[in-house]
Image 1 (cartoon, rainbow, N blue to C red):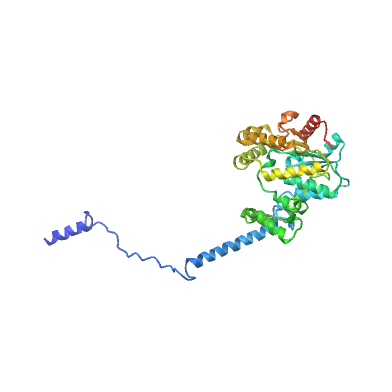
Image 2: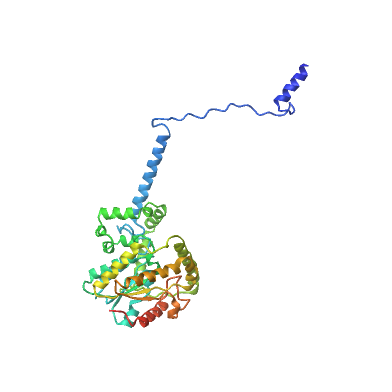
Length: 385
């Protein structure tokens, strides 16, 4: 009886299995350590230290990016930038002209291949190219027009404004313009000097970039490759002529094949995510520029810039076709208030372009810009004075 009872007990303890089967060792499980609920010895202290460390790191990154200013957004100009300083370069060139320009080209990077020498040959007018890089840019053109008038008062030049469909993208004023005091003062009077107030304002307006690790990486690149960047800045300046035009640069078919896909991606993303309407601020700067030119007695020639048909095939359905029509409607509506001539040159087929003479989806070589200039002058009868 005793033996049977022990077997029954063993079976019960083993859950109905053989009593000789291995069993889990019973180990005591300790209670978790108690955490302080008050004072500076608990999670509050840890979170405070963590927050202070993060703040110190953020301030260090911000200070580094402000002083180095790799994109030229703050305007301290203590070191060479990691980006093209074309606004400063063009402002320098305007001040160094021997005589006032009689014709000024305005626009984005797409306008920079419209050679002043060719325009002078065709029109007889001393021409300066004031185009600068950057999507959007009506504020850039407004500032350039005002600065030219400041340096050459009473010159009253004619204006050829090469306007992109993307000129009215809802972006903030280009940081590089806000960082060049000679231009920034026409956008923001507080930026007329390089004082502490204007510096802090530029930092605040560009805070997402100033406190970015990506920007910090470029700041470190500036510091570690200072001599290289100085050589690059010097080489970049050497690409430009005293009249603001770019020296001619040959293009290979292979280069076009490499650049075009990047351009397609960039503008596809732009139309998918950002460019859903014409930006009121961009319109305001555009209209202020028109009013300023009209007050000088000028009738500017506004020309919509060409787009590579291969790019248009992609971005047309994404919104380019709609924005194009909206820009045309907007400009036509302004005709009752301002005096200007308008030519839609967005389709390069009009001027018998060479498909191989595009650098990418929007930038043309000198060969195509000369064709575009010939077409512009033929359609308008010349630059209005």
